[in-house]
Amino acid sequence: MRTIAFDLGQVLFDFDYNLALNKLKDKLKVTPQEVIYALYEKDFALDFEKGLDKPYDFYLRFKENFLKEISYDEFVDAWCDIFIPKKEVIEVAKRVSLIYPTYLISNINKLHFDFLYKRYKEVFDIFDKLILSYEVKSIKPELEIYKLLTEPENIDFKDIIYIDDREDLIREAVLFGLDCIKFDGLDNLMVELKKRNVIFPNLTDSGVLYNFKKIINSYKKVLFVGIGNILRCDDGVGARVIEAVKDKVFFDTLIVNECFENYIGRISKIDYDLIVFLDAGEFKEDNYFKLLNKESLRSVSLYSTHDCSLDLNIKYLKNFKNFDIVILVIKGVNFDLCDNLSIETKNAKFILENFLLKNFSLPKEINEKV
Image 1: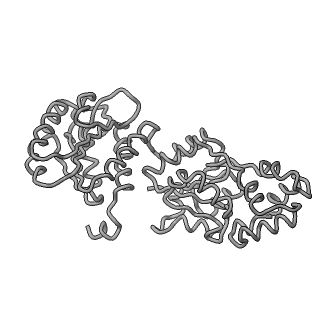
Image 2: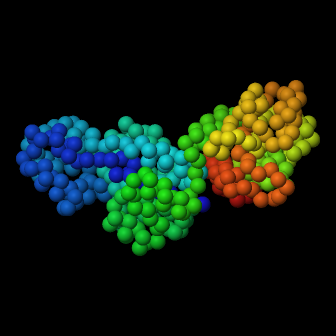
Image 3: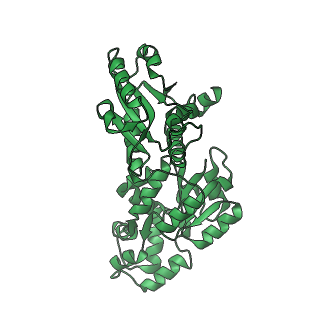
């Protein structure tokens, strides 16, 4: 499984120091161009980004070099309010993070990060790990900060896809062995991810999976049931997903193939709060998944007699205990006699398996015992 690492500035957020300098124009004792030159060409803020300067010390140094009298609060307000979120790129990061380990790695100072985190906390919640230069006392392109991308699983650099807008940082990271994408806009990013076979849900499916995750996390005792005939191509995808994740996730799993009725007695003996059925279905939309409850089951065509038998069996099962029930329908295309999945359903299987393994895995020490 690849790890995806995003830069922050000019990738997830645009920023422009001229916005700050415009606010401070009446306080400057040098030209704005001189400040920009110091920041970009002389690395004036480098020690601050490396966590060697405290915020107040940086304010004093900045004031001494560039400003007339100004309060700390006035400086912080101007210095920080320079960011604009790139919503479409953030949305891609959010979708990627559903199934891939997704990190943020940024050369950033404490004032900027605190400001952004307070205003855009939901963006930072996307990431499994935040590698911030001022916290780790190392900046890109130093090897030390990139090494943090490999922890705690000891990932190889070649398995990390690193996305940054700066050519100089990309050039150094390539020398370390990272798989680098120079960010030149959303369209180019999508092309480069596709070249690397990075498969992730579209906007509709990401909404389905986020809702699915929320539902699962609201129950204590959950059973996943894989339905389908693995000898009929895509029909067996639900069973195949369960086979791939069983013993690796913290919910119970059961493969019933096409004979769900044979397992009703066994299921009814356990006090489940929620039963999740995974089954293949046919629908015209471009997305891979539909999330249904038992009342909406007939709105999708499940393969062969599943729609009828599953509906009847659920009604029968409900006579035993009052489980909550949801059905995640996985798009199927080919239901002929064969044991291979279609490309579309294979992609759906990949997304769903890795979504389940990323979000519901057993703790590592338990997984290793299993």
